[in-house]
Length: 134
Length: 196
Image (cartoon, rainbow over all chains, first blue to last red; front, side):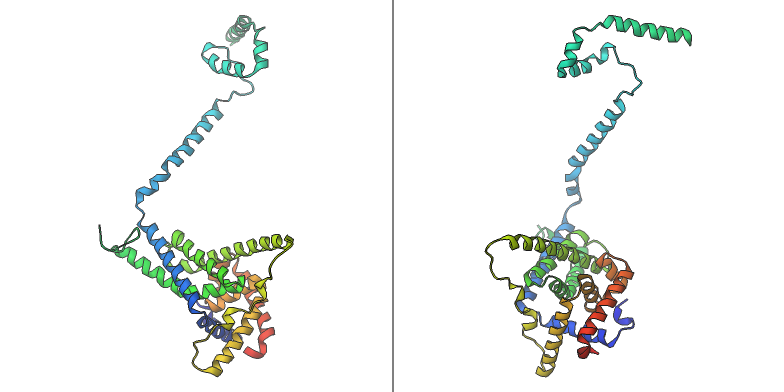
């Protein structure tokens, strides 16, 4: 709906006439530059349209990397031990613990007084008691 | 290789041809008005041309596939964003320049080239009247707050309705009505003798 179809005052009508007249006073140099800008825009639109669909696949590696990063984040999130979980003493997790210990100098010092067999025995006793209670 | 290639574009594709023609027609129809609106806001011919060119490119690259009735509000929305960016940049630049010890004369006070441009109107008396009216209206428009100026030009010069103007300005229809009403009141107060 055009505003000119709405109720307009004489002032608005005259203002429109004057503004439209002002367009005819735009010089040839400006018109030429606007024309060039339009041609550039048309070429851009046509080039975009002509782009084959498989060029969109160019973004697939980036999208895959983002998806992989998200997946790793989710997995790591779920692998974090809860606060009530007992420390793992079994050998199959030793490699990860070793890396942590090697990276932490103070922890390595503490390991010198490590009495592993005692703690393993204590844990086994706890498990055995729990089973006999259950 | 087909003969009718234009850049990357196969102009033998009838759908592409139709869209290109429609876009050309649309841009040709708005470019002078858009330039006028940008010039009123930026008060600089080169900046206004840059803003219009950027808006054309952005529309063509990002929204050419949208339905044609959406083009006009989208185009003016893009143009408005460009104008705002340029005004912000100019404000920052002005602050920086104000700190410089030596600077050239500001050319902001130069007479408006549009009001001095030669007119193709055939009747000299009528032409003179229109020249005066154009000059007075442009001067009065220049004194309006930006949003009022924008609402007035989009509605009066471009002929957008309230909803389209609201979409172009990124505000509610109520705001458009308020801005437009205030603009008309202010212009009429200044130009009453000329127009009423």
